[in-house]
Image 1 (cartoon, one colour):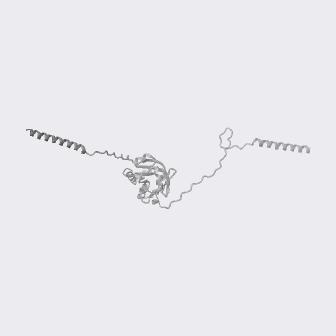
Image 2 (cartoon, one colour):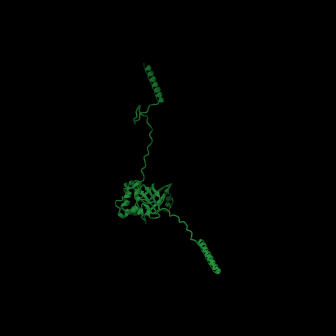
Image 3 (spheres, rainbow, N blue to C red):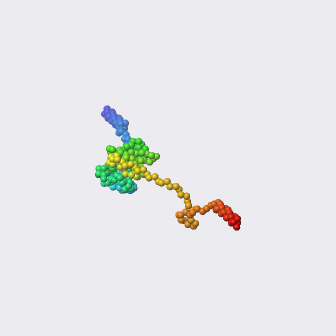
Length: 259
């Protein structure tokens, strides 16, 4: 009987030791530590280019061309579905109305589409970026191929050249990654469409040199524009009176001798 108790005690002790060892081993191994994964960066806000160009300024004509050629969809996709973003140069309405030669009325549908794509770069650029971009000119536009732009930065003023057009960025309409929209004063005309027979730019007409006119005295009590005749000075009057006196004395002396 005593032996049975010893056996039971031994079995119970062994079971307890085994359980404690298993628990300790489980604590030692445990589950691998979970590292916190940083939250992904928030996606940039969606920019509605149609709404932006409608509200931002006098860009109705350019927006009309973008919509008729479906280029607005290309711009929109580049702006919101690519990592590079987009930079758009937008001419004002009066830039189109002042366009005499050449005109856009004779362009084919494909040429007009290329002209619109020519006004954008497939990359987001701030104004400060144009300092380095000017050293990489010519820069390919969204029209691709030979549709390139030349940039120069003159004391902070960004100038854009196409061969046909030389204009400047006159204001920043919108510049938040991934979309930059800059206003330009002229329509960008590509050599790839209009050729290299570029008419010379007429020299500015010099203004005539007009000598400044001295302010003439106004008539007494009046605000008339005609100047009055100059009044003789006091010294002139004294000399005149002296001459008259001598003349009178000479005539008088001659009469006395005659009589």
